[in-house]
Length: 144
Image (tube, rainbow, N blue to C red; front, side, top):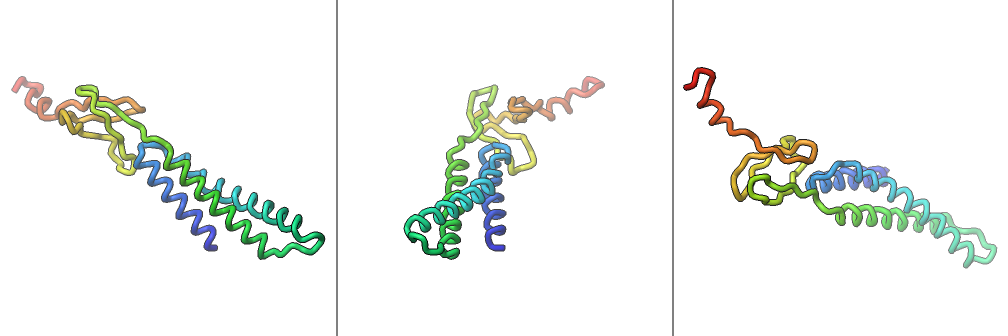
């Protein structure tokens, strides 16, 4: 049960980290894959090493379980390393060229440029300038 909670906690932490980097959440699935894969490899490797050293004696299941846990921890560390090494997606302001990352944890895909204060919107990895609503309201249909 604790193992499942650990996988869920790691998965949600990786999703948040990817969202802060402006990436999709698909890479967060590395957490359970690496965890379970590391656990299986650790158990097999631990059993094999113990069987080679025991010279015909039965292998302790507790020792194999320790190998599995160490493999799971190595898999979790590998998934964290991969996610932390993924670079963020950089967007550039069309007005001044200032680069920024868009935090996908927020629901809005709007951004205000720090340098030129232009309001921008990111659509399909393209940065679009949002028209100024004040100017639109001043020039109404009756020319006011």
